[in-house]
Image (cartoon, rainbow, N blue to C red):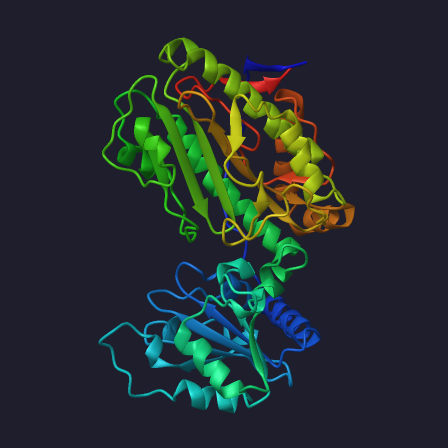
Length: 469
């Protein structure tokens, strides 16, 4: 058994005619209650959650609100069960979350864009005092990331000291809590690699992720079907239709040398026969990526890369297959890492990053997939198959990224009851991956995107994909 370029039917691509309903206010209320409980268990009197356009996922997880144009601040007390207070600027005031969630919205105009009115707001000190912040309070700040103490290069540093929130907020929190209190980084409460609240998803959230994956995978397939020498990147980008979903990253399209800059947006650059190609399309809850060559087969590649790229493409697919085969409930991130690493031909490719990571509204939440990781995989996790290869020979590129959910039988049954058509699509994808492409999948693995596992590296002939046979 080995990897081969096989003629096979294209995966079925479809998007549900009607998008899933939005999450109910009661679900957000339960998330806020869980965050409050976790904060209280950590000895915190208050959580302060910062959000901006680029880093809105923690706030959106708790409230369904993603700030636009401006920043926002969410205050959750733990000494009592008072309603959380969401501070917004002028333009987000009308974009506030559903009142049924139970969040008090207050206009704090210092979050507004420069030059806009600022005379109608209380001071931040006054707001925090009214929420119970006082000397001796222990405050947890939720920004975007946690950090290593080595960042400060100080023997007294610890990771709780490192907070990615504007200094004017953190400085005030520290002054108000005083020497007898503390202000710490509490981002791990939501996004920590072991037990962050955002790691385990409700069936309703998984349903939204699956719809998002349909959108992103269909867009990438539509783009790939139009690749040919002479086509422009910005012409292809129009195929990446988000259907109104929020983008989780810039749309990416690159040919030739530009493909080395994988995160680049589309330009007027045109494809040439033999060029490398990379493209990625991410919306909240899903990202689909493919990379390969503008060719119908290895014979159309330059002599300098033809033989090497064929071996690299095959080995990369074997790595991805081994990664999928290692996914099972209870497996550790380290075990999955080793499964992928054991197949990697070290003469052909390196891993650019971790082989895979947690997936949520933001494309990368955290990753359990590292050497020696003891983090167990659990039901409800959403995971991105994101194994980016770096050629160790001449420049050539191949990549395959899709999202999966992990679900035990109980969660699978809940999904069947919630949305039978979703589980029918999932089973169709599983059968395609197993029967056509030769993957080994545990019952817990639910492919979310229509193109899951499919890789046609020579993109002007999509009828030939890599498969295990």
